Amino acid sequence: MAGEPTDTELLAHRSWEVACNWKVLLDNFLEMYHVPVLHSGNIGPMFEPNRSVYDEFGPNGRRIDPRRSIRRLPDQPRDSWRLLDHALRTYFLFPNTQTFWTQDYFSWLSVWPVAVDRTVCTQHIVADWQPDTDELRRHLQTNLDLFDQTLAEDFATSAGVQRGL
Image 1 (cartoon, rainbow, N blue to C red):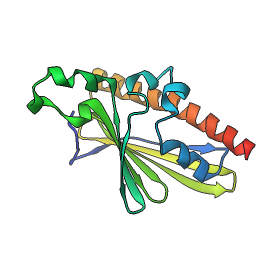
Image 2: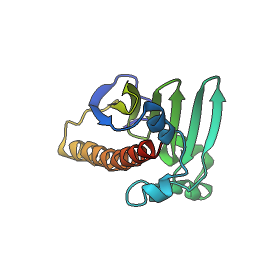
Image 3: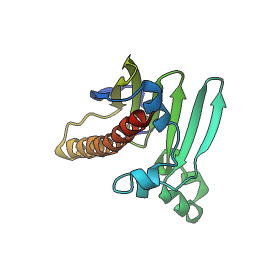
């Protein structure tokens, strides 16, 4: 498994309809402040709380979200440090797409308005490896399950925000 795939395989393509405005859902993906609380049972413990770095590129942006493992880097040789092993690299592509680079795959979520209070969210996951062994199939399923748990919480929260509006 490598960092930035060149010869890629489509590992997953999924979509969900969410009961909220597309801007409400997209806003949820633009920050990490909610992660330690809303996602305390899944991805929350993986990340340093409230420690993101954000760079703006016109209407687009990049966010680096450090994993807790980054604390171990000072004990490692500097030439062995690799950002993707210790952080999630996220890009926001205006107006409706968020990308996620991990140590294993590249994923992007896009939100598409279908009504003032309905949004379709699509996800693609690609990598430079194929799930062609039981171990890799389990690895992919673990990641999909983690995405499902996290997105279900995000979708429910966004739907609640929509009702409040």
